[in-house]
Length: 316
Image 1 (spheres, helix red, strand yellow):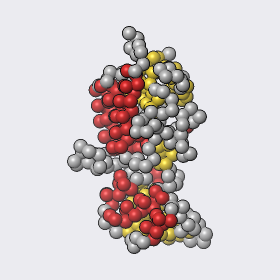
Image 2 (cartoon, one colour):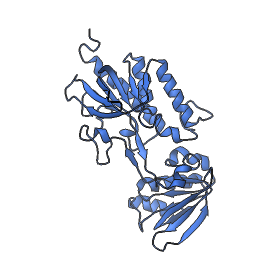
Image 3 (cartoon, helix red, strand yellow):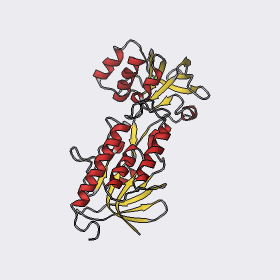
Image 4 (cartoon, one colour):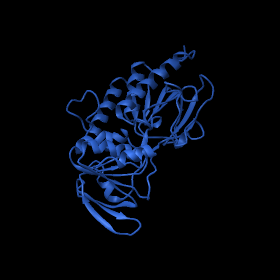
């Protein structure tokens, strides 16, 4: 059994930023990377909107640098994941977790930064071209397709919002909705319908993403008639939602209907004392690397203040 002051679960921008601040505060953080070390940014080719990189940077390199910065201050980064958790409901209580190797860890504070995973269609050509023109974030990657023709899949508010965003910078947006209507609010539907360069196609799904190394087009299929049509595009955006990675915390932490962890007010505190949440696991509105990093900083500061309020934190 290992005893810690601070355990960080997850290794995206939120987790690593929390680790940097926690390590500088001498909390001796241990971070478990999870199944996808570095998080969603490791599947992104270019990051152009994170402050401090005037020429941009590719996602995997950025995450390696964040890890190195966290380690420079003494963070213990471990490749692995947490299988189960047992939170203490008492203020100042000890939280217990079990790792994938079966090891038990007792810790005074936990920062959850497990993120959210974008939902994809699941077809092989789509998965093969992720990072080669297939994206789940128009705000992140739309700039790279300025003046080009793109397609977007989805029918909810997020899809409508991203379609209108893309329409401002792309010459044409083909929007595919698999039903005969959009789930988006009436206001968002009106916005889509009133945008002249959005070509809205109902009862339409993607049959195949075309291209070897980069997206060159898509083959669409009408799910009523079965007819297919190919169009040339350079970018494909999937906007069918995200799923927060909170399975092991269900029934233990307060969450909303979609499974996002609820934090108190402007803090990162959960309903359990000493347990904090940062990044996309508690943010379904912004989902940006910079906002995730910001809440990672907040979580580390919240954890530090919490630990300072508990007597005999260092055994003295």
